[in-house]
Image (cartoon, rainbow over all chains, first blue to last red; front, top):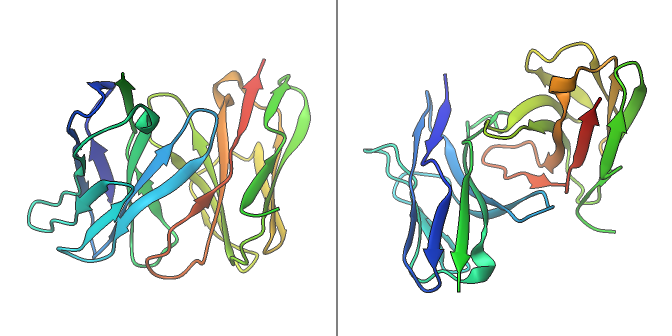
Length: 112
Length: 113
């Protein structure tokens, strides 16, 4: 069945460091891929998405490219800030739109 | 109000209690979802409603009973829960169409004693 695997956390970085959070997926069809972010005490917020191979999603300095050949959707940011501290979830949606599969989440802490 | 709201934000209940969680969306979406978020585990999709009809029920125990009276409201009725049901319960809404993203509420933190 479909699934998402993302790197284990927690991840701790200094401010302005480069961030990569790995995400790979297994899917039977042609899914859409998402990154969600969850700040403390809040629900998940959509960070970015890509709906087909080679698409690049980007938002707030974060980027991820849909790589069909490696079944990956790694999240990157060139220079993290303290305010980026949160839990990041990779997710996929099959093209029916009803089933979403989430990874376990990666906790990021950015220290000044 | 805008977005997806959930009440209560925190709930403590005994195993013999009956309680309900409420979710309301103000986004004009046709699909609504219940998820369970437990520590160290992936988000678990529990129920999906599309145009008020339940379209998915992912092997959820019968002690959880959803209700969707209209496209804007979703309830999760709880009875005779177990301590392992303690978790953050998240509601989400979406267009229910291909490639739709989901919009989440802040969640209800449930503790079962």
